[in-house]
Structures are given as structure tokens and as C-alpha cells.
Length: 454
Image 1: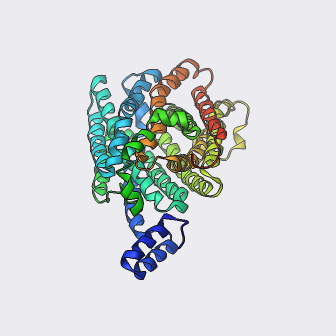
Image 2: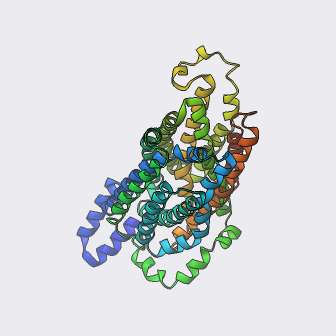
Image 3: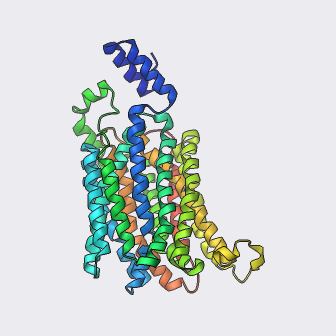
């Protein structure tokens, strides 16, 4: 019999017990692509992600503007933005272990906390209650995202040849949600106030929670009968292997993933803390910022497809390193683009009436290029992590680079905000250059890793 895939192994064990008909059914599902037992939960998960990020997209233009509305400087605003990352970092280890015992419990409890936390943010009337609400958001995200990463890994392990493209679909659903939600959020902020956008996230989280209730539990579902019988015996060994310090000591892949994710987080901090303010200045308010984020999200759909396809074709490490380098160069070039107003005639750009001038056009183009490249990098990094995750402790293993990213995200908005406060008037977009160089350094770490599973 064929031993090239887990699906063939499952059909063989079922043939011994049930007969030829079961083998024929499995072969038909293999030929059609994704098996039905994977397609249904995967589709529900993708739909829930899309709905959730409709709400998240609505709040992205509002986060830095909210800080400005209550008189915070860019550096002080960074404290509010980085607060959820503190909770994410503190809960990351526990969330991974919890999610490895049950994906649904982690996902549903986390999503419930997210709904409460964003409603709390909307109704906060002072800095103390705002910080408490944002800490709650980080706690909810830590639990929900650990469960989601684990469930995606479980499903992808049942269709390994489609891993990259399946992750690209998940990334695309996030991008579409943000692309639709961001301009809607800009309109909501201008019509109903900045606080109303956080209620959009609460509503989306409640809808996602309802869809999560329909998902099956996937812990152990991707194991063969032989693997399942030995999983309990090896549980203690698996927990030791998934120890983060041990992973960092013994695996160059996990060290490189950790460094790379830290760089990626600096880029996302720039997207949240710096780019909306620049977009509001150069593109005409919150609505203009929302439309830029929407365009970036839509362009990122193509990036997700490119990243997933490249991961399957040339390998996830090479795809992640290449796309990450391009995304870093795009952000690092923003100060150059914003300095060209007096050097290039406005007649050279046909989009002047849309975005306000040649400098704004270049700024928008570089943000979109960053979005395409970072969207391509996302599936590749996830695929690389999944391929090297310890069996039985997937969520815990995948939590390592995420924890590094969260730790970086605590400091990154503060650093970028301080750079913007000090140099922003002299070198517009200086903070973007700092973020871009951080991404380039992180992506360079992937070039030191050899292909293949460690």
C-alpha cells in the first residue's frame, strides 16, 4: 500500500476493519482535494475569522486617533496600543498548554473575553479603566489565538500537500475582513465617534463565538491509530520537548522564527501606531486612513495567495525570508517617498486628486507593497512553524514565536512613538524606517536555516 501520506495510512487501517468500501471512499476524497471531514470545520473557521476581522478592521483607524482625542502624545499613545501585548505575553505559555488539551475551550473562552473587553474599551472614561479593558483584550486574544493556531495545525496536518494554500485562504479571509471593515470604521468614527468602533469588534466577536460553538474538537483527530495509542505514553516527553527554552537551545529553526516574528511585530506596531496618523495627515482624515488600510487589505489578498503558493513550491523558509525582506524595504522607504513633494512635479502622478499629491501617492504605494509582502510572509511563517511543531504540543510550540512577537509589541509602539515625536517633523515617516530595518534584520535570520524539518 501507499505510505506517502497520512490519509493513505488511515484508509489502510480502516480497510482491515471495515473492508474495501472504506478504502474507495478515502481515495475519492484524496482525489477531490480536501476531505469533507476537514473542509467543513475549515470553512466554519474561515467564516468566523472573516466576521471577526470585519470588526477588527473597523477599529484599526480608531486606535491611534482615540489616543489623540484624549490628548495623548504619540509616545503615550503607544502605551495604550501595547497594553494588550503585555497580557498576551503573560498568558502565552498557559494559553498554549490549555489549547493543546482542547482547541474549542480556548477559542470560545477567549472570544467571550474579547467581546467583553472591547465593550469595556468603548465605555472607558479614564486611563485606568482603559488599561484594564485592553489587558482583558490581550487575555482573550491569547486564549483564542492559541486555540485557532492549534486547530489550523490539526486540519493542515490532514492535508499536508495543501498546507500553504490552506493557510493562504485563512490569511485572505483576514485581509478581506479588514479591507471591508477599515473604511467602514473610518466612516463610523467620523459619524458616531471613536468609541463606537470598539462596539463593532464586540459584535463581531459574539458572532464568531456562535460559529466556534459549531466546530468539532480537533485535538487528536489527525493522529493515526498507532500514533493515538502511543500519545498518552509519550505525553510527558512531548511536554518536555515543547519547552520553549529547550526549543531555542536545540533548534536553529525556532530561533530564527522567533527573531523573524519579533521583526514582523515591529511592522504591525507601525501599522497601528504610525501609519494611520500619517495617512490621516496626507490622505485627508480618518476616512482616508480607512480607505488606505482597506486598499492594503485587499492587496494583501494577492500576497496571501502568493505566499501560500510559494511555500508549497519553493519551501516555507525561502518564501518567508524573501517576502519579509521586501516588506521591510517597503516600510524603510516611506521617509524617502514623503520627502519627494518638492522634487517631483504633481503632473507626473495621475492619482494626485485621489491621495493629495506625489508624496502621498508614493506613501500609499509603499504601504500597499508592505501589505502584499507581509501577507505573503504570514502563511510561510505559519507553515514553517507547523512543520517543526512538536506532535501533541502544537499550540505550545507555535506560541513561542508569537510570545516573542508579543514581547516586542510591548516596546515597539513606545519606541516608534518616541521616534515620531522627536524626528517626525524633521523626517516624516522616520518611525516607518526604523520598523522597516527591524523587519529586514528579522527576515535575514531565516537565511541561516537549512530547509527541512528538525
